[in-house]
Image 1 (tube, rainbow, N blue to C red):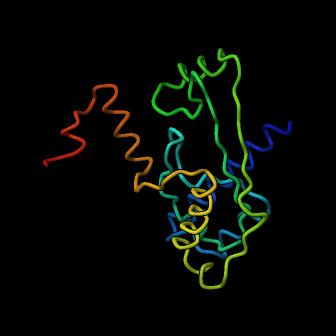
Image 2: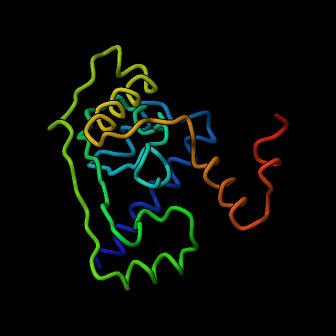
Length: 169
């Protein structure tokens, strides 16, 4: 079935990329050999509450290939569908029992082809794409990551104190 085929392809891609990283990093040529077709990537590596954007990871930009940037926003009234800080079962229950769920999709540019200099600098490339997306969404970019979000979740469930997370002041 198509769903199983997609899952198998993504699983194979993940294994290849993991092997590439273990062998010394995902270089451009190997990354391009792995792709060969359209790939959807969420470079933040996590979801946020819709008020800010976490700094993009540079990995998706290593290949230096053209990007079709699309920003996704989920406007809400009662329940934030971005899965910010609750358990998966609770999230799914609240998502499925909400009367409506809306999604806005904003095309940033039809396709961005990086200059040679930008294609060689994945961090700069990621920052440029993120800057364009942040401007369209009207959201600031913060230097937080998925790891920071996981620490916050540990705080919410009482496994870590604020002092343990923030350290000495």
